[in-house]
Image 1 (cartoon, helix red, strand yellow):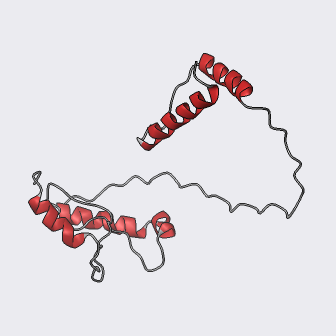
Image 2 (cartoon, rainbow, N blue to C red):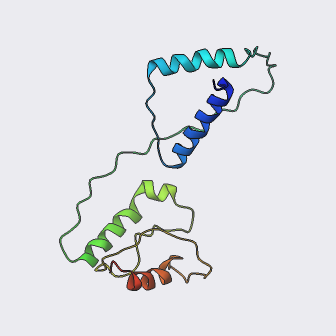
Image 3 (cartoon, one colour):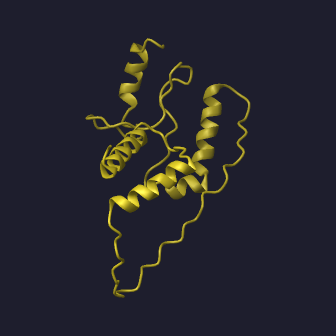
Amino acid sequence: MIDPADAIEALLDELKRQRAAGVTRVSVSTESMEFLRQVTGSARPAVSPTAVTAGASPVAAAPVSPIPDPPVVTLPPGDKTARLAALHTLVSQCPETRRHLLPGHKPVLGQGSVDARLFFVGKRRTSRKPGPDVPSWAPRVSSYARSSPLA
């Protein structure tokens, strides 16, 4: 028979492995939960609560403002470049986007040809210093897209 403490440790290790693999939910039967409660009750002595002395008053948490629902975006008719420019204007003027940007920063929607089969969005770390108004990943994207077997 396996030691209950070892069984619980193995279970926790498996749950951590699944979390690292991207699993966010695990279904557990009522019987299993009851068994775990019984095992943990017998495997470890009950911990008596310790008295907590009142120290400094608790710090009030900053009010959390929920992110509003996303707006309905309708892009004007036109070619891809004009539509991407219109989308960039909408995102740049969005009050929620501006609230989350650091001072002096601006949103980056993508860099490169809009007709490419592979269009990268976002940033990545690089040893090269980017030029003004150029995302740090821009020089590498075009070389990757040309050498990609998907292109």
